[in-house]
Image (cartoon, rainbow, N blue to C red):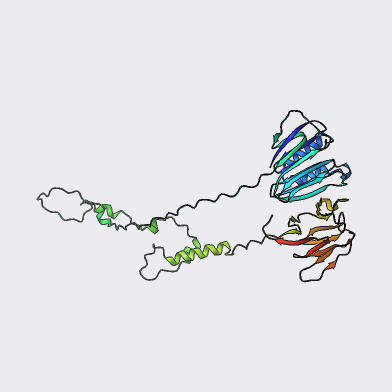
Amino acid sequence: MTVHFRPAVSGGWLALTSGETLLVIGAPADQATVDALWEALAGTGGFQRVLDVLTNKGLAATPPFALFDGSAASLRIIVRGPVMATVSHAGGIHRLDGSGVTTWLEQTLAEVSSAVVDVAGAAAADGVVELPLRTGAAWVSSLELRCEAPAAPVSKLSRPVIAAPESVAAPIVEIDPEATVTEPPTEQIDTPKEKSGTSDDGYDYLFGATMFRDVAGAAVQEAPAEEEAAAPERAGDHDGHTVLTSDIAKLREGRTAQRGGSAAPPPTAPAPQVFLALSNGSREALTQPILVGRSPSVSRVPGGQMPRLLTVGTPDQDISRTHVRFVLEGGTVVVTDLHSRNGTLVVLPGKEPQKLRAGEPTSVIAGTVVDLGGGVTLTVEEAVGEA
């Protein structure tokens, strides 16, 4: 994503952006806060770390801000205070106004093309065009976040398969040791022949001192001493130097036994991911507690884990402002009705609808439908390999 902004001469907010996270915040209290926010943006898990820095002194001391994270496929937005975000996506135009909200407004939208942020009371510099901001900070009066759709993957051209040439066995040449050294031709001179048999006649004395060994005997072999001592006597006309196929098999069996011969344990299957499928077609990963309602808010943070606020887009008064809470505990989905006005129904697979008791955590399984009323439902789903 790319950011284009108009500089502010007075009343502007500070914009910080790095990677896929953008923060627009009212005038920070001190330099230490700015340094901590920038360090959180530049590190891993920037979105959650930025929220931790903003709320480390409590919700009452949390400054007004607008926080964006994600891409065109799925963009997560939080606004608090006198700031409005106008988001253009596949379903039309969606506006989030943080004015008059006790905590903040949070929404996740799919197929986003752009998001515009207007800061109330900020004066823009005259005669200055929009400036780009990829990674860094700037004082802004307004900005536009432009999300680019991911490019279609380019198919790889198939490469022709070239068959490997057939291997040609090298001819086996038998060498006769008695023929390796021959006497040079000389003119035949009629001289009396003497009896052979002495060491001075010809080259016969060379072969008396030459040792001939086969290839297997000349190769360096690292056979264990125990195997050599335990080798049985060769029967028949075995010359003692040829390596037999049975000998190779025994060596392999011995090395396998020394290693233990145990097969590697099969890889463990990855744990399934849990999602909440909303009736409007969107899906929310249950990686942290989620509060669902008409305008959810956070009064306390149990266990130090900041919950996500999921706003259901309906003016129906049957749904309370903070209606229900979802949390994943030890691989089990736990649903709690937060004392809502009209209650919450759960429909387990193959069961009749049941009404939750207010404030009592209830475990549910995959396929369970949680009905908040007014046509708003959330279905618990599991999937393996999704992020």
